Length: 193
Image 1 (spheres, helix red, strand yellow):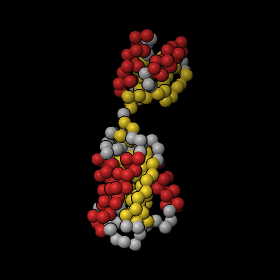
Image 2: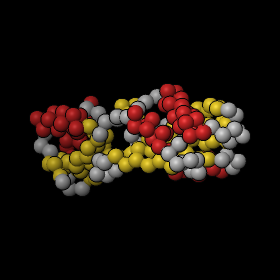
Image 3: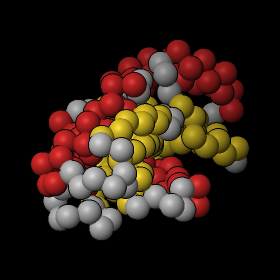
Image 4: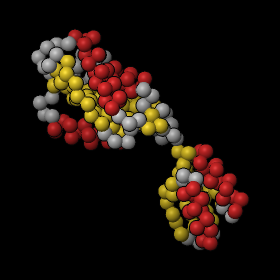
């Protein structure tokens, strides 16, 4: 699966109709949609499609034709995202009507081409699923844990200093296993739920 970490934009015209496609991380979608509606008050349609992973690791998908004939814009845009195996990604296509009707086939092509155009211009990153673990250890081992976490690509999400040190860690399963194996050979850690 792939994703983007910033917003990309591409424009193309079909029979005087202008299609401006914005590809973005899913978390930016709602704010960007509102900003685009404010920026383009004369645009006729704001077609959207997105795919993201929910907290149960299930893919959630949605698309909207926003007034275009049913199935001619939102679904084709979503199909392009599916075909590119995109996740945690949204696309918004702003359309300015040029006066010539494109017909259903023309609309499907125009919206699909818009999404493909912006996808081809974007830097796509490989998605890796992260897991979280919480560990506890003695203060004297903080430097060892910090060093090994950095060396293994572990993100320390949270640090709590109490009677023992508690770290909430985030990484891929592979990096987490490597980290826990290396650290377990050197010091005593106490995995927490």
